Amino acid sequence: MNPSPLLIHFGDQAVSLQCDDLEMAAYLAEMFRHSLDGRYPPHATYHISQNDHGRFVLRRDGHSLQTGPTAVALLPWLMQDLVSALIEAQANHLIFHAGGVIVDEMGVFLGGPTGSGKSTLTACLLANGATYLSDEVAALSPGDPPTMTGLARPLVLKEALPPAWAPWLPDPTSPPLAAMTDGTHWILPAWMGAGVTAGPAPLRLLLFPTYRADVSLDIRPLTPAEAAFHLLQNLVNARNLPDKGVSSAANIARHVPAYQIAYDEATAVAAWIHDQSLRL
Amino acid sequence: MDLQKRPLPTPNFRIETLDGELLLFNPASDQILQTNQSGALVWQLCDGRRTIADITAILAAAYPDDALAITTDVPDILASFASHGAIHWQ
Image 1 (spheres, each protein chain N blue to C red):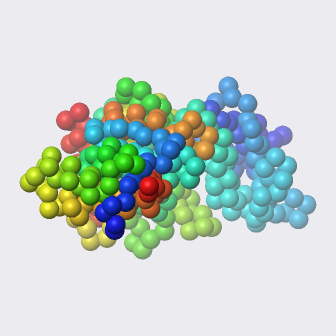
Image 2: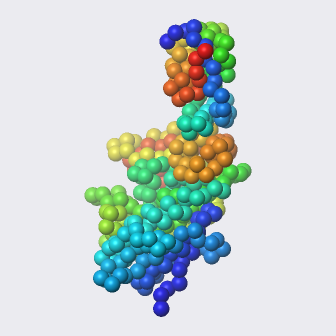
Image 3: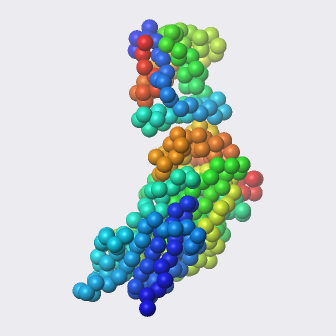
């Protein structure tokens, strides 16, 4: 008997995910535990199964996307395609390349392109008591204050020697630290002792951090126009939104203080954010 | 830059004003331009009738302490507007 499909929800979209491998199905259920919601009809269906040659096949809507020797080998492709499927048709939220955490009841948006260090900084913040929303995709809704929801997938940390994130993990060598075939490591936030939620959380701080080796902490306040510009640089569903999301991004920027941060020590950023939470 | 050229805002730009600064969005090209308060002032003076020299003189008279910087800043700001398609020349 095959496990039931998971209905994974984010914003106003949902996809269905089924895996015939029981161990992997359990891992996927844990991985997306905070994003499961059966109220939304799925617009894409993923299925991981084993073919007659013993290889595992990832299919979307019946079409083969990738094959691999194990189910876990397919996870990077699954995650990439599934995240794209969840965000590509979003029309009621502004979807950003961004991490999101909650620090002392304060929603903190971490905007930036892939490779800017969002996930590593997010891991550091979780190790310092933050609640996890997402390390890659966050949805904002205008309001006063605006709100933030996140796709609470596992943290996806890039390989490095030594790994920048190693000090923040209970034991970097033990499961459930999953090493993927694309060189990333996936970590369930709960394993770090962090709280996890899909939100919504009140958005209180917009940050645009960039990791730079050998740069001391540099924090620059952004004007609302600069903040809106930075938001729009990281907006991924502009084509689905009225006026490409410009007025909504401007509204968010009017209500939330924003900063551009360059850092080489994530712990210094964590301490600064905690200080901001006391001020706000 | 020819200071007798007359900048005119490109029609159909979406403009958001935030604390005196501007966000200019061109729906035809999806280009976004963010200006500081100086850029916003220059933008507001672009009407297709005033020349670059006129705009510079108006701002220099309004901010005499910054007159020297204004003579270089205005052409630079207008060049940036033009490169983003936010203005064209009359």
